[in-house]
Image 1 (spheres, rainbow, N blue to C red):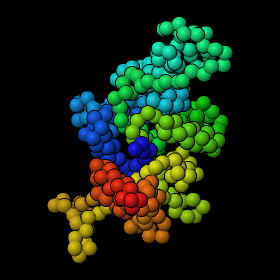
Image 2: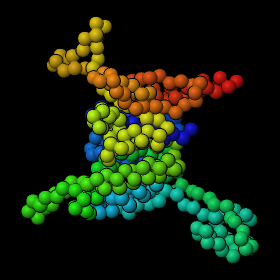
Image 3: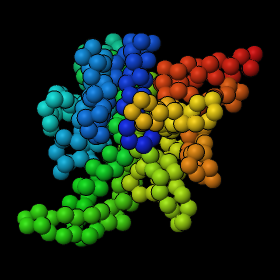
Image 4: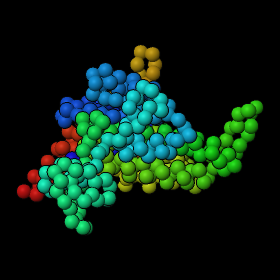
Length: 334
């Protein structure tokens, strides 16, 4: 079953580790590889290195590509294009899909491109009548046929790349100062509006990828909006924090909570540091430090299935719970 997911949490809580767990699950259960479009720096490669070494994951550091074409590059990346060589910045991008029109006679490629028709099949010579519509076939190519998980690290970083580019293109849109030959420019309000528009488009692109699982990550936002706390995924501008939730089947909030002993006291290690337990919240929940406002989280499962509120931060466990919920709902129908 195809899923489109978002995992968000504060920095260093283990989002990349969760992605690597999902990649491991996909490889073990589907024997398919993972491709990661990374704009979050070196932490992603560290989490995936064992999978890269085993040949079951590839990582593309898209933030190293030419910033002057970043909008186009992000658009192609979220449509499944992939570099010829991920280790060489600005390596040519290759499509993941070949579309062709099938001959009703020999069932081979007729040679027709897009909506343009040809009078006869280039393979068998069968003629086509005026207005005849030929079926479109799509083949996965350039390694995409082996991929089961496409991951994007992440929404927050994509937004920052776009805002950086926009502020450089239009310095008048925000505050701008000159430091020698270098100009420092902040993003203006219109820049945020443009970035919000395109971030939604990129997520929409990814939903059409020909894979079993698409996973995005994002940093966690704890901010203030008109005097009220705003908790959720961090995107360009606060407007999308709550609006982005319907874009995904599953929105999982990753948090690191202090471990407590049976008496409710915080457990500390021999160095006096708090011991933290990483948890995945699968439903809306209230943060311990502010019980009046809640973080967004959800899982899209049949109503009769049911999912737990929180589990240990283990994507393998998440998929087990998901399959159990779907099976329970199917049993209810019987």
